[in-house]
Image (cartoon, rainbow, N blue to C red):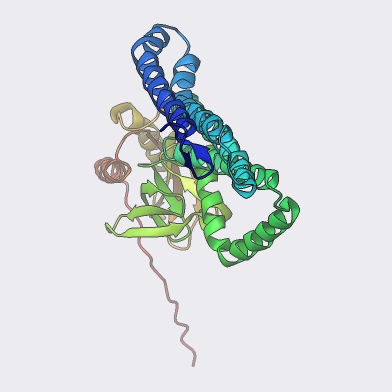
Length: 342
């Protein structure tokens, strides 16, 4: 009975080939159990993560590789048609390269996740990992196709033409993506920072690969393409060490030099009683205006203080102290002289 012929081979030969494949399945089960219960426990106790990544990345490609070898041995020992042998050989040339590519891509992705998370932005990391994986798979597929006789140069030329067409059609999207990568790597601002850009200013709500969302003082969300942020001047208010405020005060022309000196002393003494201000100030008699004597006062609000509340508090303090000292603020006036003629 075992010597009966089926499709050019005896039943015994078919049975042996099936046993080879079944044995490979059993061996794979044993390898998986040994790797998960023994090898991984050993690697978990080591200081390096490379052996853990190798164990995790190699398991499935190794199982597939053993299965491919078993199927190859089982099929190759049978007496099959020449065209079938040729087709199987070509398929195996592709599958072996794909299997190796699978292992390399898993291992590289694991390395990027493990070591890149310490140095790269969490939003940028998936993009970098995906880019490396896609590049590895493109190399693997091109290599596999080249092994079976496909003209790689022709294929690459077609891919190049197609890539140029896609790049031209999506050039704005590509510019935005590169702009997003630049924002992540260069770090001109981060989520939560208060920035000024063109006619907009507000807090950065989100930084995406295509655009950045800014919440303005009117509680409106403005979506700005990333490439525009890279081409424009962006002021990051949050990272400023302090906020400089310039205050111009106009006193009436009947103010005496002694009173002007007193006004300057009052302004210089403000930081001593206001904890929101830096000690450094600059005040001087700057100009004779059309209807006022101009005092220019520079002061600095400490980082972390509310700029608007502090400015209001300073203005109220100046008004209170000037009124107490008898210093009068000027308002626009004009004197008209009429000449009487006979």
